[in-house]
Image: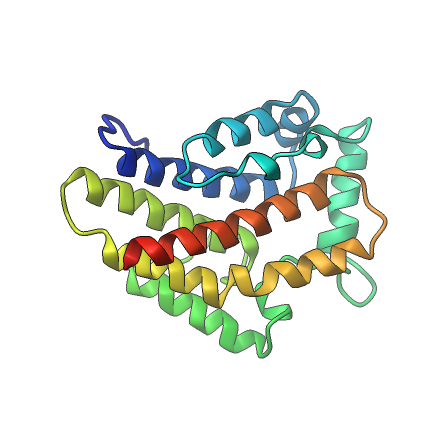
Length: 216
């Protein structure tokens, strides 16, 4: 789906935030050739920069040239993702599952699932990822902000959605992304994935602050 006929700054801001969550969900997914090409030719960084111009707070300092740096081959790019995030003798060094970082993982997944279910969302049986995986959480925030834009277009009150965005960020992504960032900082890695995590952590904190103020 695509948002069209955005008339107000608030509608455009919600649409921009929604698109940024969507781009991050794609960037954190298991990489395919298309993602590698988009990093290597600068298309991903350009898309992120373009969307950052739409969000209602400054993100220009977070878009760095490292978002354009990829290894010489897709195989190397894929291997680095697998080494950092996907496998390891005792699990990957930097897992992308929030429950690994913030206590009882089952409770973290249950809490995330309660958010999804409240909005009548269910994980697709075809999805490989669990409720606490970063891509699942990002897709949920993409949905909430998309709905916020639609509600604003309809002249309705977006406060319930803003509060849900604030609460989910507080209890999930803003809580565990800094811990992922710290773990990643101890690994030998190319520039792209650390830059992606830094950008995401900055975005989540600024978006939470904005949603908190807007909900009030």
